[in-house]
Image (cartoon, rainbow, N blue to C red):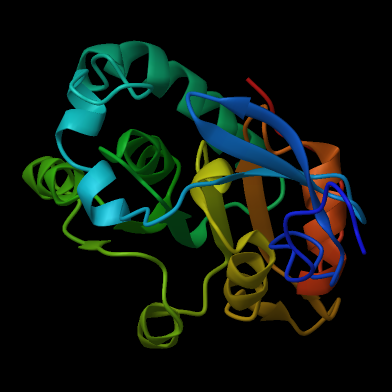
Length: 221
Protein backbone atom coordinates (compact mmCIF):
# COMPACT_ATOMS: atom_id res chain seq x y z
CA UNK A 1 0.00 0.00 0.00
CA UNK A 2 1.36 3.39 -1.00
CA UNK A 3 1.11 6.27 1.43
CA UNK A 4 0.91 10.01 0.87
CA UNK A 5 0.21 9.41 -2.79
CA UNK A 6 -2.68 11.04 -4.66
CA UNK A 7 -2.12 9.70 -8.19
CA UNK A 8 -0.20 6.97 -9.97
CA UNK A 9 0.24 8.13 -13.52
CA UNK A 10 0.27 10.84 -16.10
CA UNK A 11 2.64 13.63 -15.10
CA UNK A 12 1.79 16.45 -17.51
CA UNK A 13 5.44 17.53 -17.63
CA UNK A 14 7.68 14.47 -17.89
CA UNK A 15 5.07 11.90 -18.89
CA UNK A 16 6.28 9.41 -16.30
CA UNK A 17 3.82 7.07 -14.59
CA UNK A 18 5.04 8.26 -11.20
CA UNK A 19 3.11 9.12 -8.02
CA UNK A 20 1.99 12.70 -7.52
CA UNK A 21 2.62 13.50 -3.87
CA UNK A 22 0.98 16.30 -1.86
CA UNK A 23 3.22 19.36 -1.54
CA UNK A 24 0.96 22.03 -0.01
CA UNK A 25 -2.56 23.39 0.05
CA UNK A 26 -3.43 27.01 -0.72
CA UNK A 27 -6.88 28.59 -0.97
CA UNK A 28 -8.36 25.09 -0.58
CA UNK A 29 -6.50 23.92 -3.69
CA UNK A 30 -4.19 20.91 -3.50
CA UNK A 31 -0.67 21.35 -4.92
CA UNK A 32 1.04 18.07 -5.80
CA UNK A 33 4.57 17.27 -6.95
CA UNK A 34 5.64 14.58 -9.41
CA UNK A 35 7.98 12.15 -7.65
CA UNK A 36 9.92 11.61 -10.90
CA UNK A 37 10.69 15.13 -12.20
CA UNK A 38 9.79 17.20 -9.13
CA UNK A 39 7.47 19.64 -10.90
CA UNK A 40 4.39 20.73 -8.97
CA UNK A 41 0.88 21.38 -10.24
CA UNK A 42 -2.49 22.41 -8.87
CA UNK A 43 -5.37 19.97 -8.80
CA UNK A 44 -8.54 21.95 -9.49
CA UNK A 45 -11.61 19.75 -9.90
CA UNK A 46 -14.11 20.71 -12.60
CA UNK A 47 -11.98 23.63 -13.80
CA UNK A 48 -13.52 25.32 -16.85
CA UNK A 49 -11.09 27.67 -18.65
CA UNK A 50 -13.91 29.34 -20.58
CA UNK A 51 -15.48 30.44 -17.30
CA UNK A 52 -12.26 31.55 -15.61
CA UNK A 53 -10.55 33.34 -18.51
CA UNK A 54 -13.10 36.04 -19.27
CA UNK A 55 -12.88 39.83 -19.54
CA UNK A 56 -12.82 39.98 -15.74
CA UNK A 57 -9.53 38.08 -15.74
CA UNK A 58 -7.89 41.18 -17.24
CA UNK A 59 -9.80 43.87 -15.34
CA UNK A 60 -9.45 42.95 -11.67
CA UNK A 61 -12.75 41.12 -11.30
CA UNK A 62 -11.09 37.70 -10.99
CA UNK A 63 -9.20 36.83 -7.81
CA UNK A 64 -5.53 36.10 -8.43
CA UNK A 65 -5.58 37.61 -11.91
CA UNK A 66 -4.61 40.94 -13.48
CA UNK A 67 -5.82 44.16 -11.84
CA UNK A 68 -5.71 46.25 -15.02
CA UNK A 69 -3.99 44.56 -17.97
CA UNK A 70 -4.82 47.30 -20.46
CA UNK A 71 -3.57 49.97 -18.06
CA UNK A 72 -0.23 48.15 -17.86
CA UNK A 73 0.31 48.31 -21.61
CA UNK A 74 3.32 50.65 -21.53
CA UNK A 75 5.17 48.50 -19.00
CA UNK A 76 4.29 45.26 -20.75
CA UNK A 77 5.21 46.59 -24.20
CA UNK A 78 8.66 47.55 -22.92
CA UNK A 79 9.18 44.04 -21.57
CA UNK A 80 7.83 42.40 -24.71
CA UNK A 81 10.01 44.59 -26.92
CA UNK A 82 13.03 43.18 -25.11
CA UNK A 83 11.79 39.63 -25.70
CA UNK A 84 11.17 40.33 -29.39
CA UNK A 85 14.68 41.72 -29.76
CA UNK A 86 16.06 38.59 -28.11
CA UNK A 87 14.12 36.43 -30.56
CA UNK A 88 15.51 38.37 -33.54
CA UNK A 89 19.01 37.26 -32.57
CA UNK A 90 18.04 33.75 -33.65
CA UNK A 91 15.50 34.37 -36.41
CA UNK A 92 15.31 37.71 -38.24
CA UNK A 93 11.61 37.44 -39.01
CA UNK A 94 9.16 35.01 -40.61
CA UNK A 95 5.95 33.51 -39.29
CA UNK A 96 5.51 33.81 -35.54
CA UNK A 97 2.78 32.25 -33.43
CA UNK A 98 2.06 33.37 -29.88
CA UNK A 99 0.13 30.90 -27.73
CA UNK A 100 -1.99 32.82 -25.24
CA UNK A 101 -1.46 36.26 -26.76
CA UNK A 102 -3.86 38.15 -24.44
CA UNK A 103 -4.31 41.73 -25.78
CA UNK A 104 -1.63 41.28 -28.43
CA UNK A 105 1.00 43.60 -26.95
CA UNK A 106 3.87 41.22 -27.77
CA UNK A 107 2.52 40.63 -31.28
CA UNK A 108 2.57 44.37 -31.97
CA UNK A 109 6.21 44.54 -30.86
CA UNK A 110 7.02 41.54 -33.06
CA UNK A 111 5.29 43.19 -36.04
CA UNK A 112 7.58 46.19 -35.63
CA UNK A 113 10.48 43.78 -36.08
CA UNK A 114 9.20 42.28 -39.35
CA UNK A 115 7.54 39.17 -38.00
CA UNK A 116 4.38 37.90 -39.68
CA UNK A 117 2.32 37.39 -36.54
CA UNK A 118 -0.39 34.91 -35.56
CA UNK A 119 -1.99 34.31 -32.18
CA UNK A 120 -4.38 32.09 -30.27
CA UNK A 121 -6.12 33.22 -27.10
CA UNK A 122 -8.83 31.54 -25.05
CA UNK A 123 -10.45 34.74 -23.72
CA UNK A 124 -12.87 36.20 -26.28
CA UNK A 125 -12.62 39.69 -24.74
CA UNK A 126 -8.86 39.66 -25.34
CA UNK A 127 -9.36 38.45 -28.92
CA UNK A 128 -11.78 41.30 -29.50
CA UNK A 129 -9.12 43.75 -28.29
CA UNK A 130 -6.59 42.21 -30.67
CA UNK A 131 -8.96 42.58 -33.63
CA UNK A 132 -9.75 46.17 -32.66
CA UNK A 133 -6.05 47.03 -32.73
CA UNK A 134 -5.35 45.49 -36.13
CA UNK A 135 -4.38 41.92 -35.22
CA UNK A 136 -6.85 40.20 -37.51
CA UNK A 137 -4.91 36.91 -37.50
CA UNK A 138 -5.61 36.21 -33.81
CA UNK A 139 -8.09 33.37 -33.24
CA UNK A 140 -10.13 32.48 -30.16
CA UNK A 141 -9.58 29.09 -28.53
CA UNK A 142 -6.91 26.79 -27.22
CA UNK A 143 -4.05 25.64 -29.42
CA UNK A 144 -5.10 22.68 -31.56
CA UNK A 145 -3.50 20.42 -34.13
CA UNK A 146 -6.09 21.56 -36.65
CA UNK A 147 -5.10 25.21 -36.17
CA UNK A 148 -1.41 24.38 -36.56
CA UNK A 149 -2.00 22.36 -39.73
CA UNK A 150 -4.06 25.16 -41.27
CA UNK A 151 -1.73 28.05 -40.38
CA UNK A 152 1.73 26.53 -39.96
CA UNK A 153 4.51 25.82 -40.21
CA UNK A 154 6.02 28.65 -38.19
CA UNK A 155 9.53 30.03 -37.86
CA UNK A 156 9.00 30.69 -34.16
CA UNK A 157 6.40 29.89 -31.52
CA UNK A 158 6.19 31.90 -28.32
CA UNK A 159 4.55 31.35 -24.91
CA UNK A 160 4.90 34.32 -22.56
CA UNK A 161 3.36 34.06 -19.08
CA UNK A 162 1.37 31.08 -20.38
CA UNK A 163 3.11 27.83 -19.53
CA UNK A 164 1.73 27.79 -16.00
CA UNK A 165 -1.83 27.91 -17.39
CA UNK A 166 -1.42 24.80 -19.55
CA UNK A 167 -2.53 21.46 -18.16
CA UNK A 168 -0.65 19.18 -20.58
CA UNK A 169 2.62 21.10 -20.93
CA UNK A 170 4.65 18.36 -22.61
CA UNK A 171 1.84 17.49 -25.03
CA UNK A 172 1.32 21.13 -26.01
CA UNK A 173 5.02 21.72 -26.59
CA UNK A 174 5.37 18.51 -28.56
CA UNK A 175 2.40 19.40 -30.79
CA UNK A 176 3.75 22.92 -31.38
CA UNK A 177 7.30 21.80 -32.16
CA UNK A 178 5.99 19.51 -34.89
CA UNK A 179 4.80 22.62 -36.71
CA UNK A 180 8.04 24.58 -36.55
CA UNK A 181 9.81 24.94 -39.89
CA UNK A 182 12.69 22.59 -40.50
CA UNK A 183 15.89 24.26 -41.75
CA UNK A 184 17.23 21.99 -44.48
CA UNK A 185 20.83 23.13 -44.11
CA UNK A 186 21.12 22.44 -40.39
CA UNK A 187 18.22 19.96 -39.98
CA UNK A 188 17.18 22.02 -36.96
CA UNK A 189 13.70 23.31 -36.34
CA UNK A 190 12.79 26.92 -35.58
CA UNK A 191 12.71 28.66 -32.23
CA UNK A 192 10.25 28.00 -29.42
CA UNK A 193 10.47 30.54 -26.62
CA UNK A 194 8.86 30.60 -23.19
CA UNK A 195 9.39 32.81 -20.17
CA UNK A 196 7.96 33.08 -16.70
CA UNK A 197 9.22 32.47 -13.18
CA UNK A 198 7.25 29.23 -13.26
CA UNK A 199 8.85 28.16 -16.55
CA UNK A 200 11.78 26.94 -14.53
CA UNK A 201 14.71 24.85 -15.80
CA UNK A 202 13.01 21.90 -14.12
CA UNK A 203 9.84 22.35 -16.19
CA UNK A 204 11.62 22.77 -19.50
CA UNK A 205 14.20 20.06 -18.95
CA UNK A 206 11.49 17.65 -17.80
CA UNK A 207 9.07 18.45 -20.62
CA UNK A 208 11.60 19.25 -23.33
CA UNK A 209 13.02 15.78 -24.02
CA UNK A 210 9.54 14.28 -24.36
CA UNK A 211 8.72 16.96 -26.93
CA UNK A 212 12.01 16.46 -28.78
CA UNK A 213 13.60 19.82 -27.90
CA UNK A 214 16.56 20.98 -25.86
CA UNK A 215 16.43 24.29 -23.96
CA UNK A 216 19.47 26.50 -24.45
CA UNK A 217 18.53 29.65 -22.56
CA UNK A 218 15.70 30.60 -20.25
CA UNK A 219 13.90 33.91 -20.70
CA UNK A 220 13.05 35.76 -17.50
CA UNK A 221 11.60 39.08 -16.45
